[in-house]
Each structure stands twice: as structure tokens, then as C-alpha cells.
Image (cartoon, rainbow, N blue to C red; front, side, top):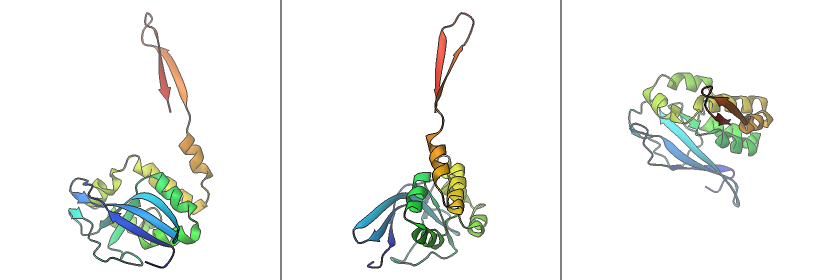
Length: 169
């Protein structure tokens, strides 16, 4: 495509219990400015197994027969950093469930949604944080959550045992 900005989806062969919904996303703000967003999963409503059936090479937006979900919080932060004019159009065009409740409700009871899209580590927290990020339009709360709290807990397992340190992050 020669129109900017635009995104390119690269379908991956990763298999989630028979579903192959994984794509890698590159966003081109300009001819010379590219951002790798990372992983997004895209599912078709009638998909029962195999690759997500995106059959066109170029599209302005997916139909409501598809939904998508980013792979981690960094995906959403990188997208947010591209600016509201880009992330709004992008999220709407790929039917991201973090901003489209209607699409989420339509897909959340399907097997593919449960076993493939929700398979990411800690995905419920990612979804909540992404939804908040795009509603409040401020990523400072996410930085606090990503930094977390580090501490060491010291205890004895018995009266005659040595002290044991457990580090938490």
C-alpha cells in the first residue's frame, strides 16, 4: 500500500489447540517510520479450526464476522503511542474486543475465543488495562502497574530451621 498510515498483518503458523489465529503486525506511519506492534490474534465467527480465513490482500476494515485481541500490554502501549488518530481507526478496523463490547459479546462464548484468543498469559488483566488506557487516554497508570512492587519475605519453616528468603516481584 502507498497510503499512510497503514498496517501489515503477517499470519503465523502458531497452533492454539487447532486454531491458527496469530498475526504479527507492523504499522507504517510513513514510508520510513515503522512500528512493530507484536502479536494480535484474529478469529472468524464461524472458524472451528485452522487458519483465520482472511482471503483478501488489502482491506479497510474487517467485517463483524471477525474479532481481534492483542497479545500483551506492550502491543496496546505501542499502539497508543502512535496517537489517537491512528489507534482509533486501527482498533475499530480490526474489531478489537477491548474497545468493542458488541463484538466481544458476540464472540466470547465461541470455542475459538476461549481456547485461542484468551490463551495469552494474564490476558484478562491485559484486556482491562487496554480498555482503561483507551478510555482515559493516559498510560501513566500502566507504567505504575508494570513497575510493580518488589520485596523479600523472610521466614523460618520451623523453630530449628534457617531463615528462608522469598523474593516477590
